[in-house]
Length: 193
Image 1 (tube, helix red, strand yellow):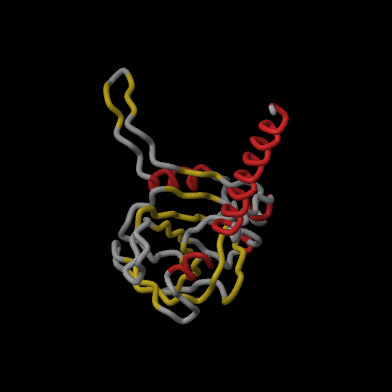
Image 2: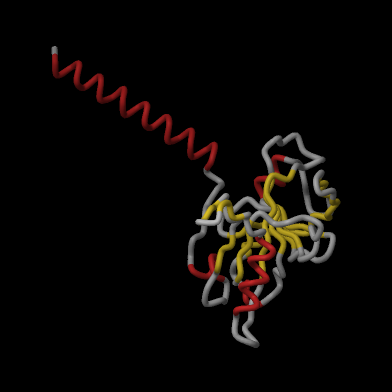
């Protein structure tokens, strides 16, 4: 009696694991992150991430956070003269106006045609974004019923961008735009390549 019970328990556990694996592969199976050196660094030697400083303090009391834009300026000023760099600025918690998706969106602006970024953008269809244009991740395009030539409406800061490509960077689900689309906003994070 005990061997039959053990066999039955084992089969039930195996069936549960198999069902969970099948569900995950169908529900999330289209997501493939690329963590190769080229997808992370492009053609650059280093990628330097800048994030907002938290509420810190020293012996004189609280230290105000340093905005990401000021950090970018300080790092660029410290680089040797003639150093090649590309700045990617990311803006979080943006909302789409033409989508039923309630999840916040990340938008990353950068010079996507810069040779330093070569290999970082996995473009599935279309072309690199120029002014007033965007590349959207394929899963966002599918869930929002967006296609090439459609308008992507971002609520805050307000922007209407033409979808010119489907693609992503390193498996991330950010909308990619040309530099200067969100000049009035302070980026939440930045990468110097």
